[in-house]
Length: 535
Image: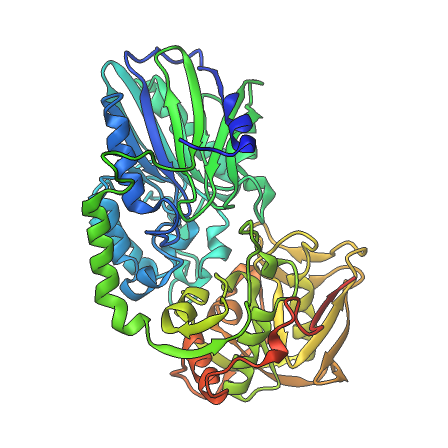
């Protein structure tokens, strides 16, 4: 298997001595894992490559387990058009043994998620996902026996789900919270699952988490989970899309526990080995060795091709073309659009404002999910950029609320934050030398209060200073404004016009029609047109 010198250096030392709890297995236990696939079923290694590698591992040891650490069913057109159904079908074909829900498993609504959870053969695990009455929706853990060795897999889902998925999914019709993810009890719930698994004979405990090493709510990071617990042997992570062969974090007893994460969209296959030699090894597999001249499982590849064929007529329809790239991510898959103005955000917000005929348009950086490359722009491209099926409305919003929400959106700059606001019809500057003074509650939601100097200044609406006492018309998606996505509040927003709106992607299709299919050269500058100036 080929690896870069950098990756080889990182992985060479990616092992450590096993926990004192554990009894050595009679043969290596190989745990293959994926995280944040986001519908990338044939990106990079792809599901077909993963399936072949899994079979190759079975030739070296009978103990091979396949695990998913969340965010598999959303993030691409194949997921959106089937509301996750195609992805569940493929996961069943790959015979996943363990899966946990990430925050984006809930994006199609709770009813659909619960329906899909019953269709997933292995089911989901989560020790901290409950109804508000405290009832757990899934088992906290699952124990798998490998000869005489028992391994417990504990599921942990990020409490950020309440804001980073559609918050409305977790509420009843009256707006009361129906579901919870543990919050300040996250560590307690995890420890309880660990202790219970040990009592039930687990020799090893592997936490499969969707937390992230870097996340919006740092108190819920993978490192903090380890620091506040004991009895965990390794943590397989997701959520933050980081490429982490091994990160050691000290647990409550001072013992170093490995955390590992494999990026996103199957760039790598994650691998944890509970070795018969008394060590635990972590690895990231960059490419699948050929087997009989093949690097993919033919059956899985055929299933993927059939799905793509079924959708081809719809997805390949051309709506326009561009002579230049419009990128949300850089060459290392880091989210430009969550920390700076980008031309793709300007293009999308202009589409919203033009089609909805409003003073202003806004979109959250986290709602822009892919690049638009130079060349033809197909329906597939548009859906890949905006895969959430968000409804687009026109609102009335006061100038004061607009200012406050801009301030909340830049509270983490220069760090990335999905709630950063991109605009059309409005420009603003940000002084990052001023500490953020926005007030958030324990779940990360904006309270509407700013207790100090604003970072945001020189806000102009169509060239004129923002009037805090004026009401403006604003085009935006329901996730962001109505449902408090990314923790935003928009306390005085009122819908105007149609109660049966178009979707965000339909607005882009309509905008391309207005532009006669040609993206103007005005959008060519990658960093945009001075709508968001960071000082």
